[in-house]
Each structure stands twice: as structure tokens, then as C-alpha cells.
Image 1: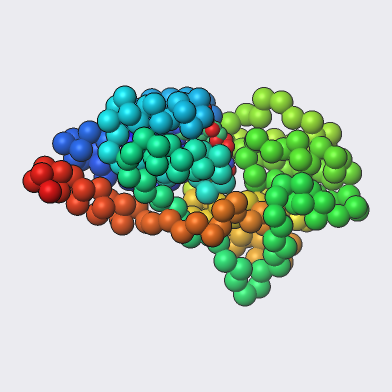
Image 2: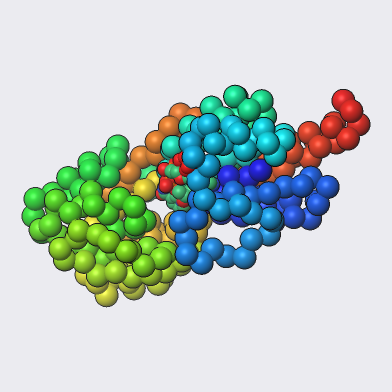
Amino acid sequence: MILAGSSEATALARALADMPALAATLSLAGRTANPPPLPLPARIGGFGGVDGLTQYIREHAVDILVDATHPFAARMAANAREAASLGGCRLLKVTRPAWAVQSGDNWQEVANMSAAAEAIGPAPRRVFLTIGSLQLDAFSGASQHHYLVRTIDAVPTHRLADAVFLEARGPFNPDSEERLMRDHNIEVLVTKNSGGTAAEAKLEAARRLSLPVIVVRRPNAEIAGITVEEALALITAHHVSACRGV
Ligand code: NAP
């Protein structure tokens, strides 16, 4: 079972869809209103913590749990580690490399979202927030700023006083990102260090415009993951061994 929520989960699911003997399934948190078509049978919604996930693993005889959640989904990652151990299944952690600062970048790295809000500074600025919708309230105290907020789905509730909302799903390209930042006279970009290519264009655009970027570091950055290709190789090898009774 693949714990989804990242482009890596989708890529792995597409590859496993061609191997029906593996009986692969997906699990989605259900946060996105219109997820792209799913290549595998899926269940949607939380399990009810570690106990619920452990029970699910046992009841469905899950052999391999693939944590391919987003690098910032820290709670699910921790639950997956514990439940895989309790439920007696193998855990694979799939992740993508973090973005690294490049020549011409003006990054300030911070530990969390409240630190990001503080790092914008006391003077009013025009801020491009690309942090998803869940932690917008961290910026409600920094109400001196104007925010351009881009999310995949509409933001249901928020406490931002001066904000323009934009709904869009990546991948984005550097030219359109640069145009967007110019059109909105953006002075600073705030992002999580999600890594990957789909959302990377904003960093290139900020570099071109010499804009400062506040980058929220990943939780559990010390936990190394494997690539989609490596996961696929391990899953197929496991299946071959199981079929041979090894
Ligand atoms: P989180 O804080 O780590 O998890 C919160 C709870 O959501 C979990 O305890 C679990 O509920 C449920 N959950 C999360 N992923 C799930 C999955 N794949 N299948 C079933 N239940 C899941 O996660 P989050 O940051 O809220 O992210 C939620 C989802 O959005 C994840 O799938 C993640 O990959 C995706 N996502 C997150 C971000 C981000 O920046 N955080 C960005 C893009 C996509 P129970 O305890 O009840 O099982």
C-alpha cells in the first residue's frame, strides 16, 4: 500500500498499475478536492492514528507499506514508521531531494512557518506565499504585509487581512512565474523546501528577479529516503521472492 500525496507516489502507482499481480493500492488523506485520476484502487481518509493504520495493515495483510507522502507530512511519516513495525510489514520511505541554494539565490532558511512569518520583517512587504493552505494562519499576526497566496484548492477559511488568492496546480514554468511575480510586484517569496520539479520554477523566477526567498526547512530532514526507481526494484524483488517461497 502506497501512502500518497506526492508526485513520487503517483509515479510509483503508475508503474505498479502495470503489475496487477502485486495487488498494489493507494491511500489518500483526501485533502485535495479533485485529485488527478488514480491509477490504482484507492482508499481515502485518515486511518485514525497509529492504531488504525496498524489494524489496517493486519486486516489487509499489507506486506509493504510505502510512505510516499509529501516531505512535510511529518505526522503520517511517524505513524507509518510505528504502524509498520507494530503491524509487521516492511516500510519503504520514498522521497525526493530537497532544493539546494544555487549561485544567485538569496535564501533565508527557517525552521517552521512562524519563523517564516517573522523573517518577512516588520516593514510592510508584498509577499508571495506558496506554502499550501494548512498553515496560513501562521501569517495572520504579520498583518502589515500584502499576500499573494497560491494553493491547489480554494482556501476555505483564513485570517489574513490583506490577501489575493490564486488557485493553480503545477507544474509551473519560470517565465510564467516571473510574470506573476512582476505583475503582483512581489518583494519576497515564502516556500517550503518541498523539492522536486513541479514547483521549482518559482525559485528560478526569484533568482532572475533577485528576490529574497524564505525557505522553510523540512521536518525530519535527517531521514534519508529512496527514489521511485529504487522502491520499484525492492517491491518487485520482494514479490519475486514471495512467489518462489524464498
Ligand atoms: P500529516 O500532518 O502528516 O498527517 C495528518 C493526518 O492525515 C495523518 O495523521 C493521517 O490521519 C492523515 N493522512 C496523511 N496522509 C495520509 C494518507 N496518504 N492516507 C491516509 N491518511 C493520511 O499530513 P499533512 O501535512 O496534513 O498532509 C496531508 C496529505 O497531503 C498527505 O497525504 C501529504 O502527502 C499531502 N501533502 C502535504 C503537503 C504538506 O506540505 N504538508 C503538501 C502536499 C501534499 P490518521 O492519523 O487519521 O491516519
